[in-house]
Image (cartoon, rainbow, N blue to C red; front, side, top):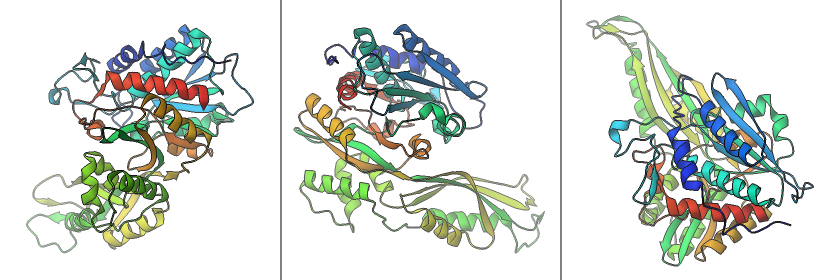
Length: 440
């Protein structure tokens, strides 16, 4: 028999979030950062205090992920385990740009500030708070819980979730559903209506390295085979390309919900203008209306008067579910015959239906804590560890519940300066997650 702990959680979430932020887990993408070992050990210690055993696995020096099974007495072990996952790494932060030290975990102005506050040490803290409170009270979840805290999500998951899937998939045996980051946050439409965006799909990722080869020579000579010229022209074509709309099922469901909430008829010819009424979230939504490709780096040459034999560039490409082949065909056409590409990262798009008992539990638990809540699916422009779990046939949802102030630029917090999360939002999230683990 489980016990409803909704009046007993939220006692530690702010402290845990702050402590996690204080552990610098910056991921520079080159395997030279501090790694996640210290954070994994901190999480292991919190779980050990309440009798939950865990194991820390390293894919490389200090690149640590943690796995734990939680199925105390009272859990229905005939049900498949629910994978509850979060990543421990964060993107780097330049302290000079911030109002506060990004790794101090400072609590001020009603928020926890610091790198990882929303991406995603907030959810890590909420999960740990709920699990610890339930473990202390002897209140079992409805079904077994597989807790996974990963390394390297911010650089494509090669040392984290992907490594676990490739090398230790037995640890995830039986999991068919998962919840993780970038979903469950509120979007205020009016005083009595907040859409809670549940991520049911995310774009695929094609990080491309471009190469143009030409004839090296003296900078004062004429050169009709200049690698820099060829590359620059190709990069400009990619950057200026207007990708056609390609509306997925998740995107259409979100647009329908927005249309109903705003009481407007959405016309694809001017839909992005209408979406600006949603505030900063419109940037994310706009990026999911089509495939995208953004040039991000250029390189080539070493001296003013030397024409190099090769020039390079990098492209951040993202494609909607079902859009990979069209994306690559368009890229090849834009690059032309003299520029080639190689993959730096090639991760599939993922998508699942917004239906089933898990979704019903999300909707119910949100509505109990916020009567103005309406859960809606959406397609995310970025990527998460869900791409790795998808290889095992696990349905993934972004469900890190937060009721946010209407004026907060939440989307701008991701990888942004002065990243922060309201303490009230954290406490709301723990109450929702507590109910959810009892019902899911």
